[in-house]
Amino acid sequence: MSGIWVDGKRADNADAAISAEDRSFLLGDGCFETLFFDGEDIEGVSFHLASLQRSADALGIVGAPSSDLISAALEEAARELRSAAAPSVLRITLSRGAGGRGPSTGHVAPTWIVATARLSAARPFPPLRLSISSIRRNETSPLSRIKSTSYGDNLAARREAERAGCNDALMLNTLGDVAGLAMGNLALLREGDTGDEIVTPPETSGARAGYMRDRLFEAAHELGFSVRECVLRTEDLYASQAAWGLNSLWGVRPAIELDQRPLTQSEDVTQRLHAKLADLIKRERGA
Image (tube, rainbow, N blue to C red; front, side, top):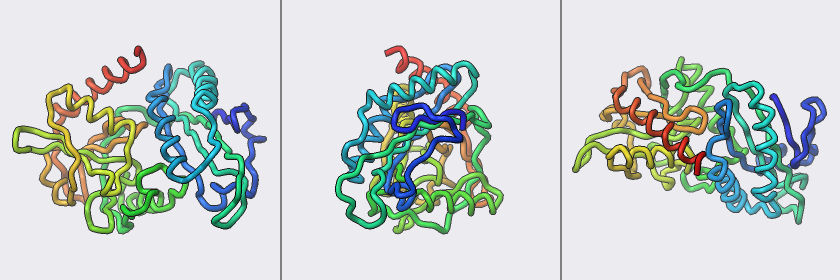
């Protein structure tokens, strides 16, 4: 890690600490957001802060820090990162706080951390080679729709994919529908009733709302594509004209293989999406 802020205060990496009774450490009772820093600016701060608050609400975490407090820590982190002028990641982690074990804690003060780290790769990331995970996402759980610190299933699915020689996993839900990837969302390009459309699983299938997912919707609309959420099955990936993995760090990342079977990839559409996304993010910063 390059820098750490605990409850808004800069801390030396060696001295940064949380309580041994912290609920996120003990029980995964917390949430997080991951933001991309391109060497100059942080992407999607307002979106991520709103998303963090929705996650806190879903978990019933009260007394979370204000957006202004977190924004101040993010800006201080950005000032430090600009001197390196290199792609980096910022993570905001919010815990219910030091309440110990058990379902009921009474009132405790939440703990929050902003941490930064240098990215080992930069956009565009190498294409995705996917494997279908044996681990199912529980679409009935509220945790499927937020970035919870209970992230063990996703990490186990990613490790399973790596053992199969892949770099991410396709996760299905308990009904066998596509939920997304272990490390992000999924979108497909396919022929619709009125022309080419871009589709993605709905949150009811276990997908998570995300910054890059929203930006993809916006970019696709501006490029003239129809965009919609719909229930997807594994065979829809093989029948698609293109497939992409989406998250705040990757941007839009082509998926070219599923369980060692090739997936069609439209380089032209991918390049157009990359260009339009860059334009949208630039406009967003200037707003």
